[in-house]
Length: 263
Image 1: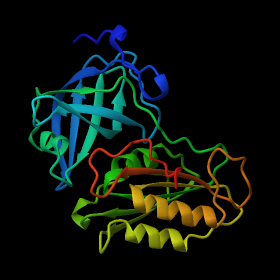
Image 2: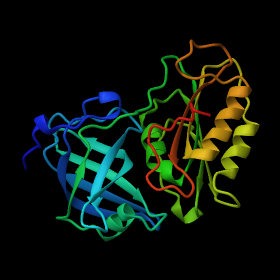
Image 3: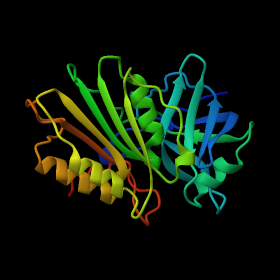
């Protein structure tokens, strides 16, 4: 399978050069839960990059008008040597990407962006990781937990539509995983948990991935109560806060650049 020619790469935000898309072929489709479909694809991924745990890429699938539609997903697994890429599609709404994933079978093709971005890399010396996320962030949460070494105290609270959507998660020894089913407004239980969080002098980082409005509510609360953005120098007892919106209520294809900084 041949790679696209780099001379055709378009410009991204701020004139940033985007690497050309890659076409990959579906090798395996697995229904992980009633609302999560795993697609393993193969192709020429020479030089393709995935920027760490939780990194996201653009996926291009056929749309209703005959053209392609673009959506953002997490890199669930990437094997550069084997030319394999795994993406998990949440089946939560009747959109073109979820329709495609629900009907996908081996031999189907899709295109992906030239690289993945936005991985999560804890600071050296971090001893505690707190993760707050919803069903759309579940693949990212899984990859982050898998990447953490033993010795880090990991806590995760994951709000899913129904408890039948729980999956097996690997993480550091002693990781504390709390599953909660959506009740009332989406993300409400994540907000309640964030409001109860306490921090000591240990080096802590908080990762938040959920609906845009909920992310902002959690972000405002934590920043008002001593958290700091990861770009600031570390301060004892002040957790570093990483926040990202994975979707926005009543909005299709919400920006993957939304970290709440315009709040």
